[in-house]
Image (tube, rainbow over all chains, first blue to last red):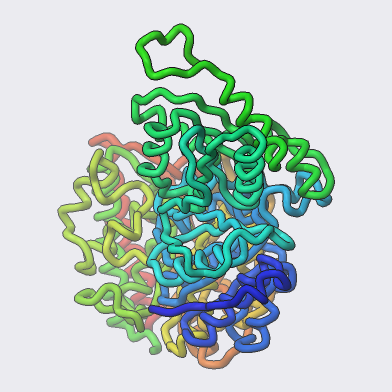
Length: 335
Length: 292
């Protein structure tokens, strides 16, 4: 397997992130008759329109039945087909959790899950449709690679990487449009390797998904307003996590904030914390994310309410910078 | 592939040997799901020794027929079949359920050769089978997919999702068996969660439903012959509803839900061996008579 979908900056401003998936998978399927798209009555919502135009016979709609969808995908993958399974994150992670665990991950099949409408990107739909536990769930699944792309370019890269890599993938993308982070697809995307969005020496903000653009904005503001040098890491791969980038941040900035459109329990922040604790190196640490079920509303309002937008990140950076944290042996005065 | 008398008797003999091996494996393991293992063992025998187009020397042959044991706890009977066929070393049966063994209570398809799906969590196999059958269509292959579910297992709604998919995509290349042994852990299926009228339900979900005595080799083969003939056209899938005895062959306990999971002491072991021999003698006599 090789190649993959490429698109340009003109598309980026006009195409929703899920539509990038639709175009990427259509391109892959056009070139590989073994690839199949499976969905549970969400062909339109998960943007499979382009696929339906090029190879409708390889779009399998199982109806509103996520458990069946994952079992069907596992059976197909075992037989040599490469299924791309798309559905809302809330249901791909929770409604079919046992099938994800046993049929997909335990059997270690070559199935790709595209989880759309992630985090609070379907904000007005309320908590039934918010996916703020999915990273905790999928991160706990052996064999599964978990990716949270930050924009459309990264979504295309993640889909291509999943296609070109044997094994199960969970790719978590948003509903609607994401803020543009990259200028094109050629920024060196590599599964399991964080991307440095902003160099910095005072503090590191580690973000994923829609929070990366917010962290970038916060870093730019803090540079001008406070003279702070904020490192921003796009931790697009939640599993396997980039240990080297985290340890480098611990040693070089001694202060870390994680930010995610997910519960603070079990997601990106927890994954980073595990690495930090395991390293035995102390560092000031704060996790930003939802503390409970999120409010109903527009995603930007929900993110502001949870303190995971640029303003929330700015406030948290200032808070953590004011903590007395030193590299000495006096542990009593440390954060 | 009509069943000749000799073939029938040969399959009876094989099923008898496998029943003994299943009982022996339960003793080696200390305990096991004997009831649901023995109820489905005639089907396993018929499929593995007459119908499945598989190659022991090439277990992952991509054109092979697939078999999915959705009622994964029947591994206590399935593992002996896979060993007897030559997919795995029969010595492995002595390690069944033991710490560090490749063979556990529910078989891992990445560890036990010849297993097409890792099952054990109930209600998964039918969807996996539907996907396997759909893949055959997409890849242009002629293999058949066989899947067997338990009857109590049908309480899981996911089975019915899968049945809808089989019907919607007209997966006649997928043959479903239901092991209707009438019992589950807590009692008779009709007391725990009523399934009847089960044949009507299966038919309403789009199956060509065939009801057979699932502990009768001849009836099983006749039904499978019909299902295979139907598989040659894209049409409704076939479900073979097998009326069976839980613990078939253990004459003193068969049909009792308590035989779902059993530990066997030496005295009981000897008693059950004698019962299996009597059961075999009765079945051979029946075969001799009915094959006339």
